[in-house]
Length: 269
Image 1 (cartoon, helix red, strand yellow):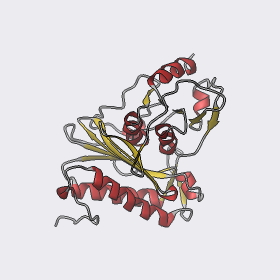
Image 2 (cartoon, helix red, strand yellow):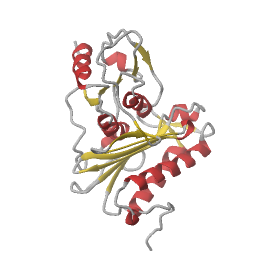
Image 3 (cartoon, one colour):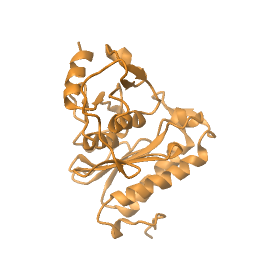
Image 4 (cartoon, one colour):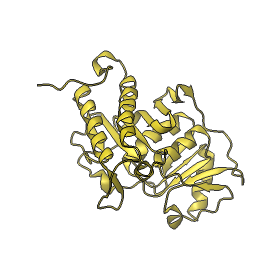
């Protein structure tokens, strides 16, 4: 028997996957909120943090996508580390980014849902329930937060008043010779959303995986910013039968392409 979706919006009633993804992100956020600050912590083999919320919400999101988009493939952080059909659309899911924050009652955590068509991101929803923020973007349709259009700042000047974000350990990989103010928030997708929104001038992420970057990738580009890898690797198009838990894509995200080139040269000297 075919499983029925628990969401009010079904894929069959929409011309776009975006309304479905927005409702799915809200539903996932409600489930996560029940565990927020009250869940047992485990450690995965790679040393990262895991909670029951990660796996249960991963399962919920993947089940809903499978029910509504049965022809599509899924990559998710906890349950689907690879996919098998190269010609299919692929959803890339991070059910809970910022797990350590989440487990300690710190509100900087969220869920990322991205859709890739022909191997490239075309739609994304990033939801931060505790902050009441929902970002979304579609290819050639712009980037938004809570329904309002967002644009990365056009400035390419780094000053001592500028804020940049830096993942834990990034300073061990790159010489960060910036006069701006460094901040680390414990959630990769949150830090990248700050760039898209213009609150951070740039962000350096040393070892993100595909579920950390897929949603933010199109969000930043649609906001007018620039995001790419520092080692010239190519996250997209995805490839079938690849275990994405073993792939890292060191990132630099900036407000402009000019700034991206300047900073890449600086941090790789």
